[in-house]
Length: 217
Image (cartoon, rainbow, N blue to C red; front, side, top):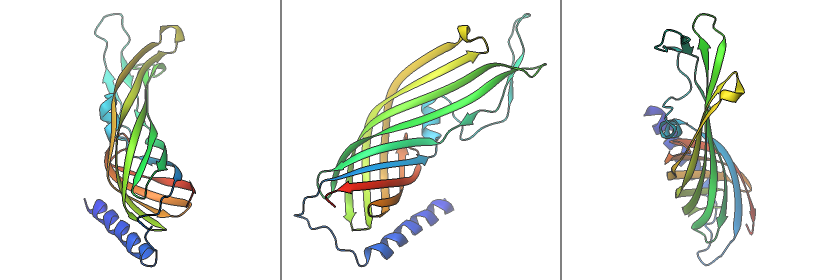
């Protein structure tokens, strides 16, 4: 909570510094802008949605096969990627943006023989989400923008159990809704800029990255 408070204070300090001498965009001025961004966020929501509830990794644990002839195994560390998102937004009005985002998330884990410690299987989960998004910007300065957004889309999640023998690989694909609600976001810069967002969804609770704008600016 202390880190989040410090982050919010830093964001509003940036707004104060950069917005003092900037002229707000005229209400009757119509500008079409294009925007591309890429960033990373925490994987907590994606972990829950995909059934792999962990943040980075966890310690190995024993997984016993309850038959006389089966191999006793243990699971290695499970590694999780950040929530990686690329997006495109089109500015139709001073306060209205339409676009979408593509989000990726993955986990990777080996299954090892308990006695020989050899890897006998590799499990990995990958999730790709496509989310159409609407953004509302309520502070529009030359170098600072404050905004909120909401998006709803679709996720495709593949769970693969890949033994050393590739002919016996098991693939399970699931489809379910994807979403992203950004409570508050701030971008600082003009053509090239950095941004930070606080929200909830496939991008994570905290999301940050870089962007590029072009068009009638």
